[in-house]
Length: 118
Length: 449
Image (cartoon, rainbow over all chains, first blue to last red; front, side, top):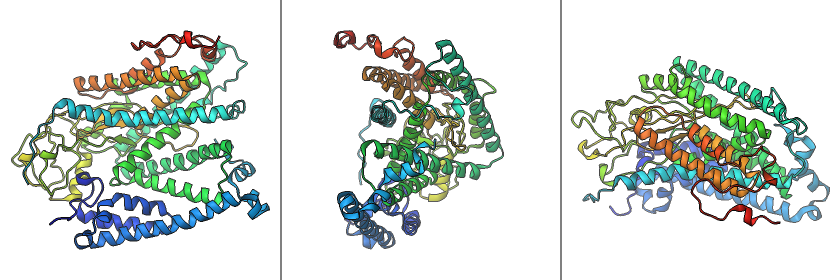
């Protein structure tokens, strides 16, 4: 069966078996909703073979569903976050005015003395 | 599918295993050196030193106006306090392990990784942001830090995360703690390194040593130590596994009993070496130790998970590496109360993959990071010394087949390759030639007039 994914995880034979993969994929997907897009990215990375092979929606339908969901979620979140962040960085004082100085990280760190914790 | 029976020489496979453990150690050291150079040059005068009190400086706070003798005394006092705290913590670990509080230890490990990644990582990121004036806003910063920390805790906590992610996070944790240690005063750092190396030696080799107890306990119970241990990816002999079956990470064990070895029982492992003792799990015991064992801990879990996926017994005729050395991770007490790292040590996992304790990463990087405060030739010399020490320890391990400390040889070689001058004066004196057979030009000739 050409294109059948041998191992669902990127670790190959060292990774999870097919049965465990579903549980893990689902767990990563659900936890990612707690404002953890990086977990979605790790999910995609971990199950990269499933994502890569278009035939896997026959052999691993459940895993593929979660992994594709994670990929979409991560992309959406990344787009939103990077657009906000880039606007902030590039816009700077001109765009935001006073608020920029209040929000920028090094000022926040100085204001709350965050760099003196240890 | 016909098996391609191209036998790989022991040199190839062993060499690859060594590379797979030396690479992360080198990466950790490189990152610490980069951090030290970047952060120290930017904040030339304003050091974090003065108000930096931790367990390691509780007895004596070094100031530049003290005489050398005072500094030495103070450093010795500091190191004594530190080693004493570590010893107590290690014995506590042994006790907890003895009473089978494995869950508690695992949670503690997760919690300490959270502290290291979240607080130390965040603080170092703030230093970098401030020094470079990177205009990131606090919302983005908090989100990214939160993600980074939580995924790191998962990686350390869960046994079956992507290997690369787990390894990367362990290296990052080692780097953060090592950078933190380089912030200690100069004399304290050097004396502390030597003290930890000696402690390691004592804890692993002496009969009453906590690490030795831990190893024996784990071996007798055939359990894994839930500790922060870096495990290199094992070299898989592709023609030695039955197709379609999940490989345990213990591919590299020789099958002694081919008959009934393939038990679905979780105790049956392909790597059955009746002479080896199980590896103990020790969460956070400082000290390094190498122990020879048939380390089944992980395999037990894996077996339980994957159940009956085994097939052919006879195909798992993997050679060699009989010694399982358990690496212990080092656990250190620093300012944050719950730094619980595993013991230091070098070991071979029952899969034959080399395991190295995170404490080793940390102290090697501390030595190199300190050297980076002088100049780069020193860094290079120390790096070579440490790698040579690591190699020597591994060879010794292969011969001794029992728990061995991984710190002493490297630290001693590393300290020897420092310029033999009182610290602080190093910059003003010409550097001696590298002592490792390196035939480069004498540094003296390259110094500006």
